[in-house]
Image 1 (cartoon, one colour):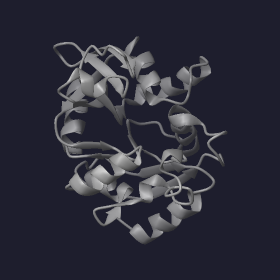
Image 2 (tube, helix red, strand yellow):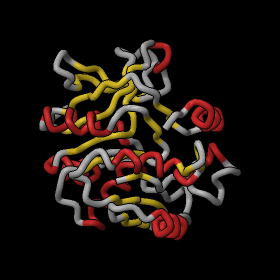
Image 3 (tube, helix red, strand yellow):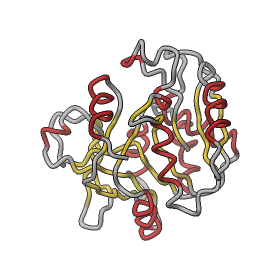
Length: 242
């Protein structure tokens, strides 16, 4: 599942009439760089893109022109603006219900570019037999301070603490918006929403899940670009090497 239902207001006017995942980096849309990695994992049987009513047609047209061997399904979350958006967790649940997902599920934000191999991430998931989160080692506490969700891991890689944009981080591990959830944990997403938890931030769900289920952090040091600003978009266009 690729999360692509945001309105990217920090990148306006660039994204006022164009979804952020379809912005180009190194000659192709961001989303195509993400999908390129999926070929590393034979177990991926379908690509689901969850977007909003403003951009659903554009994604459908892109998917038709893109082709590819893996079927692509575009799901419209029926929102039309930043004011009525469902949030990352809300969109996950929307797509799970719409597509009737009852399987292990990989979820990646549509503005996430990374240099590690998804095959390695998937192998880590199979080894742990539990839900996993990709965590970029930023090498410095100052690099994550008040910027990212920060994971604290034990010696076996299990998440034992998670804080969203902490002022005093306990590690330098930035949780990226790349997850694999077990079939059982996919069902936990509905429980999280039903319990009245905020649906905006996937990090809140990870923290909640890790409090009662084993969740592991896959640590990588390769390049990672979280394209949320003009500065980060420019950096990706200069430094990302596909």
